Length: 62
Image (cartoon, rainbow, N blue to C red):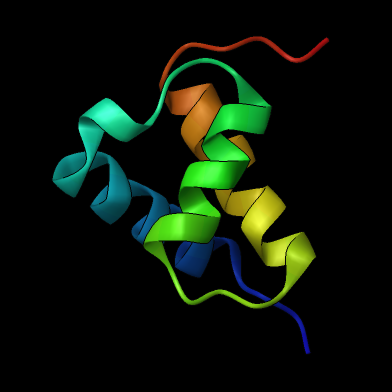
């Protein structure tokens, strides 16, 4: 089952609006925050959402 980028973006945007203090430019921190704030069980989907939020916050990929 493929997860559409639209789903990742929508959920990422909602999380940033509701919990802006829970996220920063560190991917690992954002990954933990996504796990705590959502019921997403798939590790790959969680990582995609955390990566999207990290990019929105201004983080650069290593």
